[in-house]
Every structure is written in C-alpha cells, then in structure tokens.
Length: 567
Image 1 (cartoon, rainbow, N blue to C red):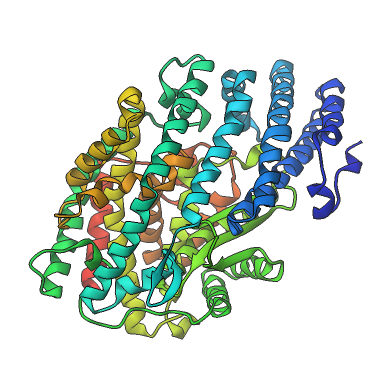
Image 2 (image 1 turned 90 degrees about the vertical axis):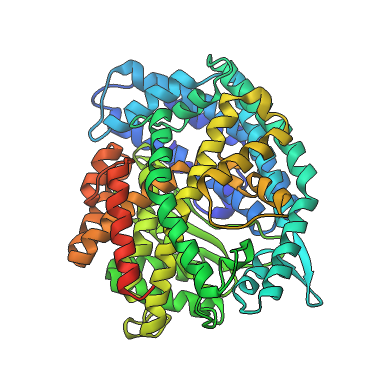
C-alpha cells in the first residue's frame, strides 16, 4: 500500500487527510510480530517522513514571505486538518508498538522517547497545539513587517545592522534608536499575543495532568531526560560566577579602546580599534562559493554536502522585506535533505550564521543511514553542538590562504570577534533562560506584560553589567519581546549555552589535532538520536556539563587565544 505514497513535491503538497488516513488504518490493523516489526516500522517511518516534509514545506513558505496570505492559509489548514489527526493516529501506532513489547535494533532511545510522548498525549490538546503554532506564526508576521526609513530608503531592521559597525557614533546611535522605536511600535501587539499564548500553554499543561506546572509539561514534551530545571539554575549561577566577569572585562577593554566614559548599546558592534567593518562578501553567491571552500577544508565530504544544497536550491540566504527574521536549518524528512534560511546583509555575523546552520545541515546528511524517522530525534543540547562546533572547526579556514573571506589579519580579527561574542552570549542566554523559569514559576504574574518588563530588567542588570542603558529603560526592559524563542519555542534557549560549552571542548581538541576532532565530531553526528546526551558528547570528545569548573576551563582557553591573537 505504501508504494502509492506521493512521489513528487507537487503531489505531496496536494495531500489531504482523507488521502493520508487509510495508511494509518492499514498500519494499525497490520499484525505486529518479531517477524514483521522491521517492515512495519519502516512503513510507519516512511509515512511519518512524508507528513513531516509536507508540514515543513507549508511552514517554510510562511517564513520566506510573511506577506503571502495563501501560504499562511495553507499552513493553517495543515495545522487544523492534518496535524491533529496525524498526531492522534501516531499515538495509536506508538501504543501498538509499546504494547507489543518488541524492541527493534538500535531503538532504545526512540522507545524511551515514545513512552514519554505516549504518557503526555491528550486528544484534547491537539487543537490547542495547532492554535499555539498559528499564534507563533503571528509573531513572525509582526516582526517580518518591521521596516524603517533610513537615508530615504525603506529597509528592514536586519538591513540596519551594518550601520552599527560604522565609526561615526552619532550615526550608529541614530540607527539603533530608529530600530528600537520600530520595535516599541509593536509593543502592544506583542503584549496581546503573549496574553493569548500564556493561558493556552497553561491549559496544555493542565489537560495533561500537570496542573499549573507548564515547565514540567514542557520538560517532558522536549524529552529532557539528562538534566533538570535545578541544573539550569546551577548553570545560571556558574555563568554569573565565571562568565559575567569575563564579559565585563571585554566591555571594559572595548570602552577604553573607544575612549568613552561609558559604553552604550550602539557601541557594541563597531571595531574598537577604529578599523573598517569586516565586509566578507559582496553578494550571496560570493557567500555560498566561499563557504563551500571553507567547508571542504574542514572535511571534503562536508563540503560536498553543502554543494548538494547549492545545486538543489536548498539555500535561502539573502535578507528582503517580508521575510521572517533570524535564521534556521529545517529538514525535509522524506528527502533526507536540509534547508537553510537566513537574512544575510554582508556582515561577518552572516558568515557565522551560515557556518552555524551548515553544522545543522551536516547533521541531517550524516544521519541519512538511520532507517527510521524516530532515530533522528536529537536533543537540541547536542544538535547545537553540531552547529556551534562547526563555527569553531571552520575558524582556521577563514583566511584567503585557505579559500576563505579574509587576509590573515582580518581572519584573526574575525576569530577574536567570534570568541568575544561567544563569551558575552552566555550571560545573555542566562537572562533568557532565567526569565522563562520565572515566567512559568509565576504564571499569574507573568500574564501582565508590565511584570515581564520588570523581571527582564532585573535579570539584565544581574547578568549584563558593563553597558550603560540610562535613559533607555523602555528599550532595555522590553528585550524579552525581541527574543523569538520566548514566544515561539518556550524553554528552548539553555541548549545554546550547554552546546557552546560542548563546542568549545570540541574546538580545544581541534587545536591539538584538527583531523581527529573533526572525525569525532562526525561520528557523534552520525549517531542521530540513538544515544543519550552524555554519550553523544563523549563521542564528540566533550563532556556534557554545566558546572563552574568546566566553564572556567573554557573561558581560560578562549581568553588565552584572544590575547594571543592580539585582541
């Protein structure tokens, strides 16, 4: 029967639930024994892959053009008519497999995940989950429409970013304030969206038997088995102890080099030594060609993976109006192909973003050998090691001597910039993570955006000293509105902090033996979701950790390299 699954993208995009449902019914009715388990699971996987791919096609269309109302309607239709029904049917197949007592080869972790998901499933939550998805696309619609008039031209807020690197301080300030005013213009719209999202999430938790405890519901939903909320809080404390002083040292050095009495938010991207901004590429084709050379230097096979994406049109890199903000790597599960989306405007940050998303893309390619979709579920705590690790593994090849973007001096400058940004990221991550814990520990208070503003400001002052926000209190306290993860993917952010610590450990190994470190990295990626987080980290040559001692080793190495390079 599964031979009749859609063969082309056009055919897949026409799929309706009436066409899908018979496949699930046939799998549900088919006998499941030790002799039939492999074929049954393979058929289930192929069906689930096609539905996943349909979903991603529909979702991506809403982000590449946030003004495309037809794409939004089609995605909403999928969320209303296919996703809830498919999830209910998936639940029945999970229950069938779990009841059989059968354990397919290399399937222990997927079975663990399945048991957790089956325990969490509630039919009443299916329409709520679809509604949550629709609300989060409204956040993209709000932010995707944000433009300002700059020097007589309408530009996106992303297109203003190069101005923040201009040496003329008044110009940087003008652009920064203009972008901030545009965000504040949407303050009420985002507040109203939040007032819908938070009660909906509380209802999801309550329906699943968690009462008012959305955090516990979300922990199980995100399949977090290897650490707890208390571990996250210990990580926050370790960052406050070890990283905040290091970030403050970076800010102070910047302040002195710029000759300023205080460092303001618009002083954080300009080169502190007065050098022209790094402008690594002139157009997106240049970005693609040079990134390909860098990836081939890291590993020839990784470079070939990237070139497959170029040939098959799996890259949407340039910034434009009505394009959702940020960047991501998505996966077409049936095709076993990744898709990279970003908003390049000619900055070194764009290079880092492409290296980062390239790591995610390589993860997709490296797991193609795994037979079942259930084996591809990788915790973001390690998936982000794939991306952040690639940023660092690629760093030796940023120079033109290796086909990269820069001369030797600017390549060193780019690495210094990356390491300093990484150090200052940990405290920012701690703000976002601590904020989310507070929100869901205090959901009644968190329904009032004024309380959210106050809590964000408290955490910002705790973790982000060194920058003067006087007179900018409204801009500072509304920072939670500008972090899409808070609105779209609750509790998904601490993974970046954990993974960055793993990535620095992989890089430390590479400084001793690049080839061996890359080989370990690829072996870990190839495991997909068939191992625990500690096992994945160990295979990659790192330790899954979030303690002060491990952080201190990372910070010491990073500061040592920065100083050696003249930063």
